[in-house]
Amino acid sequence: MAEVIRMPRMSDTMEEGVIAAWHKKVGDKIKAGDLLAEVETDKATMELESYQEGTLLYIGVEKGASVKVNGILAILGKEGEDYKSLLDAVPKEKEATPEEEKDSTATKNEVEKPAAEPVATKAETSATKNEPAVASEDARLKASPLAKKIASEKGIDISQLKGSGDDGRIVKKDVEAFSTAPQTTESKSISQPIVLPSISGEESFDEIAVSQMRKTIAKRLAESKFSAPHFYLTMQINMDKAVSARASLNEVSPVKISFNDIIVKAAAAALKQHPKVNSSWLGDKIRMNHHVHIGVAVAVEEGLLVPVIRFANEKTLSHIAAEVKELAQKAKNKKLQPQEMQGNTFTISNLGMYNIDKFTAIINSPDACILAVGSIQETAVVKDGSITIANMMKITLSCDHRVVDGASGSQFLLTLKSYLEDPIRLLV
Image (cartoon, rainbow, N blue to C red; front, side, top):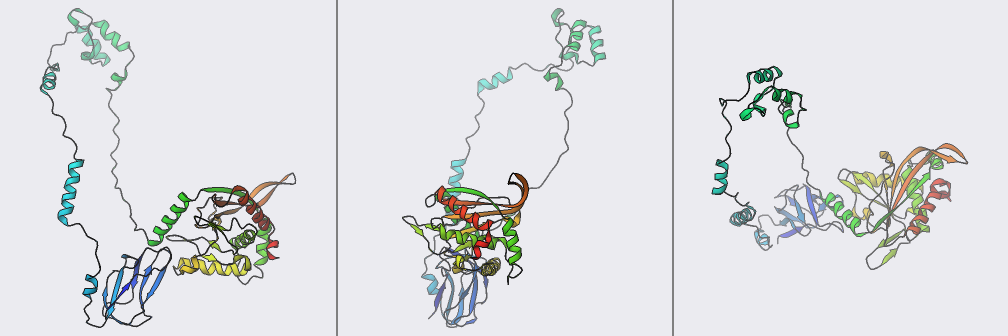
């Protein structure tokens, strides 16, 4: 009997998936465990295996299309078996017919149609007709010959003058008075306007479909930002000893240790001393975690993924370095599994490699805090009354005020600062 293959829920936050690729086609023989398709979820691209055997009778979703969780992906059965009854049994959403769409559009147009412009009334038309007509060009101009001569020499349009003689006749003094009077804005406007060259351009843009990963990132960050009351604490740390310690450690470490690895280790040690910062908001209760699982934000093409370093406080620096590198590579290849991105109790986002001085990060729910790390910069500082150069780094802790208050967050940063400014303490 034919069986329907539906879209499984591949992560706890998944609502729909996109078919990235089909590895089988209609008519292929399928065995249990065969790879049917690759599905792009909100967190990673994952492989969809078949749990049944049979012939692939039907594919319901094309490559690049999305389908909601529990939606029909394909149908397996015996070769030649009728499967259409299975599809007919699935209720479909009612789609508007062309006639309904036409009626809807017509109704909308009637509502939005602007009112007709008012027609001029008879009185207004008469008033327009009664306006004084402009004098024709051959109308006789009353001006003395001398006034005309002076106006011509001075380049004055004599028709613009008002005469002071008998019957409004323009005389010499009218022309002279006009030529010595300051020019008004109106008279200046007679000059030829500046003609600018015509420039034509073409507007253009690209529209990119929003991926499942980007949709989920946007949804989760918006929920965190607008539901959790954020406040921020910034501190400057002297990294001189950390710079020296890293150079020494990399001489013996089997894997290259980064400054971010040192920060992860220091944060894990500090979190054990400040459980309030290592907490989660669960709505009707606060969970104070005894274990330390640190999420490390990794930039990928479509946004941010946060793989989790579990029990970070119990791991050595070289172990943390190797694990971060492995998870970061899997994130960039979209090979992270859901369990590798779950369970974080604290998150670190580091933009130091981009030469960012400092920034604030949005809390990665349900964590109570996230640490934003800036670049290490040579800075002039005062030490023992004299100015010297030191490697300084700014960090900013974003806190959920429902869980952490200013004093708790500040105490955590002071402990973190003590570890980073004297990293030998991390080895004890």
